[in-house]
Amino acid sequence: MQNVLKTTLTAIALMILVLFGCKKQEKLYYPEADRTIEITPSIIIDNGENLKDKIFNYVTYDNFLNHIANSDHFLIVQQKDFKNTTSADKVIISMRYDIDDNINASVKFAYREHKYGIKSTYFVLHSAKYYGDTKRAYFKRNDDVQFYLKKMQDDFGQEIGFHNDLVTLQVIYGIEPKEFLKTELEWLRGNGINISGTTYHGSPYCWIYKYFNTWFWYEYADPQGNDQYVTKDRTVFKVEKDSLTTYNLQYEGGLLHPDYFFADANFVDGKRWNMNMVNLDTIKPGKKVIILLHPEHWD
Image (cartoon, rainbow, N blue to C red):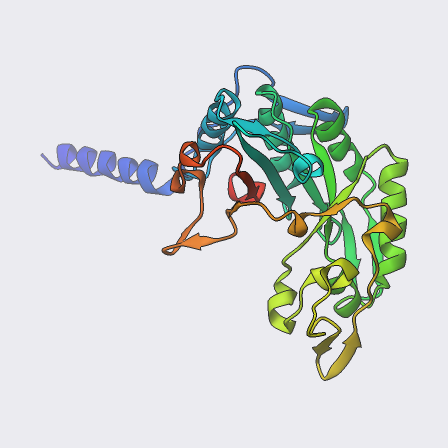
């Protein structure tokens, strides 16, 4: 009897160890082809996904792309074409992506859009860790970032734009923004990245020190003059300003003025916005829509 009891207790202990002592391996899901995406022979992205969230995952995203790509209700354009595109019988949609943290996720997004023939716009953030190392009075670029951008642009047909964190660069890091922007655009364009547009980044520092990166542009001038100075640690900074035309930039994303703007940076009733919260099919033809997503929320 004691041996039976001992055996039973041992079995129970092993079951508990298996259930609670070992981490369950998450299952990876892959598209039908291309389990990996080659950036360079030495840089390979795993194209799989973990369904960690029932909404923010590539399955939800893929279903959305499938719907808008195969509907006669929509005309999908890149940001560079948004302002000058009109239609009497279709809703004009422009998909915008801010690559704030996860450039691998952005490549996976671009891959899935390319599968449906969708061309969108991805804004690369110069202050992100994938782009380079930014410290006080110091910046060193990660030159490999060009290969990720080329993959999205040349192989997947996506537009690349410049995500502006320039006021942050001046106020927080003490780096002169005009020369920095000139240098980085020359480097990007010189390496075949065709940047024609920009849009501003909502850095956490913006909320701490109460400024916007739009203040760098004359085109965003505040009539009341409240975009001239930033105070940080009792030091007052006069914001450096310039014009889009100085850098051969054709548009600023915040000045495109769509009829509808949806973004997963916003929250509705305490929940992060997602495509299930709006029925795009009910929007009347002729209207113009921008949908902003941050790939890191979906990976």
